[in-house]
Image (cartoon, rainbow, N blue to C red):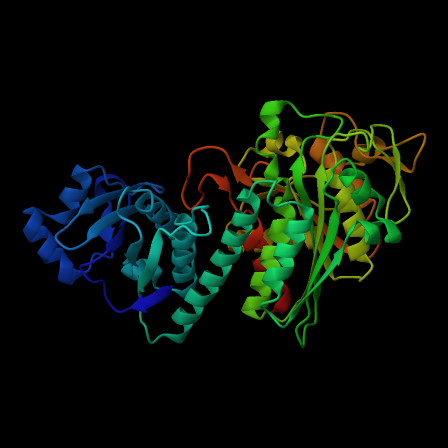
Length: 490
């Protein structure tokens, strides 16, 4: 789908950049062979034409003008373009272009010359373009992007490798977006588990194991069974294993897979329920990331776990004050049936930890409190292991995904004390994200490095599209998990 070309042609769409600030902003990547032709047609300098229609170097902005043979798109690169600026500019351009009526499917050429001189920036450009072009659509619908070309040295092996890596990463993010955007009556625990197995069947290095409700009951997964007990669609636990030869490190990934969250007997307000098909983003993220890690051939062992359930109210639903026996035999007093994610995660974390991984990372749309604390574009990271936390934060910086470390204070554990069980599932409304992390920590054995990622708010965009993020599922955390695996493999 992506091709390196030596120069842009006067056909399809040509994307160039605007870099700098204010009136000093300069066009980046305009092919000299086309500049003269375009300026002759317009009768004035190209920069004047673009400024006349509102072109700006501001990141996220893009204007499109017709030329004799092609559409010309000018996208803002900011004052001093780096990899993320290029990713955002290409994403904004493709998002704009694919939303134009009557022009798709598109053949697009990214012509940013010196701005994509390095492999890192070239990879960012392709990632941004492919993510910006994403649209959730029916299986029989035509993709809005037919072909993507990038002006760079076609004979450069490093450039070709960067493009292949970018395609793999973008494909995994878009796969997770598709899963998350799918309605809950179509994607539920059974069909989600089947979808993961279907994707894994394309790679010989991947293996899948699925626990159905009978197996969950046999092995004592009390948290997953309780949360899924109110639904006619039984829960599942899915293990996706990637075990390449020569792997020296083992990374365990655990994802929350609540395919729909009504709140259970602690029923959510109706307006809060509409987007709850996305409460399985954590599981979608760890599976999509593992598929990409396998496709990239990274020499690191990865085991991804997805705890899948539908949290519904019914006569068989678990109740507030119920005492649950978890997989690791700890007993938990359920404080609130709408705090279900930590229960399914706890079972999966305890199971994943039995393999003694070098690092265990869980990913979940876990708490509204995290959104209150950090907003909708920054996710929370919590851990009592400084080394593990710094390793994941470094991966997030490399991927340019925004995480902020929050504490797990001593008083958070105090809120989990119970008179009828080993611990309660939640405390009061203050510091809810921190209390949730304190609860999950109880299921991590000593000696296992653990990091908790709360991606609530960042996983699903209910506002206007921005950069390479459209409406709906964002794919937040997948690029970080891939970068983390890459760092462990090196």
